[in-house]
Image (cartoon, chains in turn green, purple):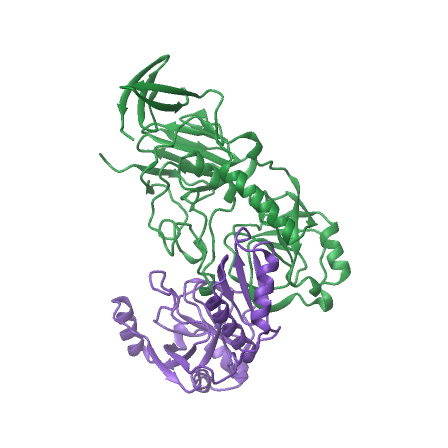
Length: 367
Length: 237
């Protein structure tokens, strides 16, 4: 049997292998990188039965196509890029089974800008400095440090070591993000707020800023009313920055630093976006309108911790068309969770061939 | 600094004593092994401490850092440690240093003199940033200072040695950049497979050693085959 791979037929605008990033090496100038929308990757991995930090594919804006070499459980999360499997619409935030040769295609983005494709077992490229994340700027991670190209074949890891992955699961509605063209981001006061005069700070909190086309994985560049620094001095002696740092360079327009940011920056930081609202920023399309509201470190931490707990612990539910079957074989009960697609479906220890209303037992693995 | 990091500042200028304090403080906080801290990012004048808020509270951590920072240690004083000086061979000028002529013109000095001044003394590594392994070096002779390019290059080859104002540094990777390029080293300053991945560490020193084309080629070959060992010497504090 050949190795299970995911074949890239077309990378679209840009497709990147991403996991939860490469922390621990910032002191050597190494960017953390990782998925922009970490919540979407986390939930995608849960659906695919992976560890939450397994590597998936971040697809920007759509027009990308992938082919499965083997049967695999997968999920698409994040922005709505109109995914289809061999032409049939794929419900997002739900685990599904793909059969050998089937093609997953992303169309045009209608909501958000980044979708995540998570496949059971995860993308199994060689980790660099502890992570598979692609940092294209410094050519680290991913596949030889670069964005995916047509013809790439990505090895998949060993699917589902615990036998829990199943198609037909979905993320409960309570956990789903709401992507809007206009939204508010909570921020904590920045370390150089006092670099700005009162009018500058008032402008920042009182205005609506528009996400520009010049935004990327390094940062969202915003356009709106000018934020004046005291004496026009926007430069500082460089120091370390974090995800969500909002710096205001000499052109007096804010930049929100994102996943691929450099480790240090030389512009005054007026505020820092709260962790909980970063996934919203990750999905902001050019033209999206952002307002900032101040919060405290404590409130931001409480919100983040509560959200994290919900994301990791809320049970996934059975999708509407899916069912859970209990099979009793030789006195032992096996659980089979499955969608209703025809074909071989593997769930936990049980493999079943579904053909219309008939289900035939194919294989049982002792667990 | 947001909801998952604290920055401890020791000043707001590029200053040898301030930078020494930053690194001595970094050692001390690391040594204290405070549970919940996930990463340290020291820079010119401050230390960023990243932490997991579910393991340690903001106030608790801020309090402990403040106490460590204000306790009466003599760290950071010159003379505390001997200097580790890393020798970095550089082929100055020509195609590898396309801006040497411009820097010399700006300084109103002959190119040879610029090379002599640049390679005359060790430079302290103030911090790594911008790109993996990029050392920001301080203490360059202001006579050879030169403003950045007005329009940065889209591709600066790995190993390029540059000048920006009174700073000098080495681009460890191919990247865009706006510093004036005066030479190139065949030595790799960043290798993700090495432990640690950066050759030059903050607090250490770098001294540039002029080499000719043949010397550059020999070292480049040794680097490619993995046979190259950078020369390190220990200097007086």
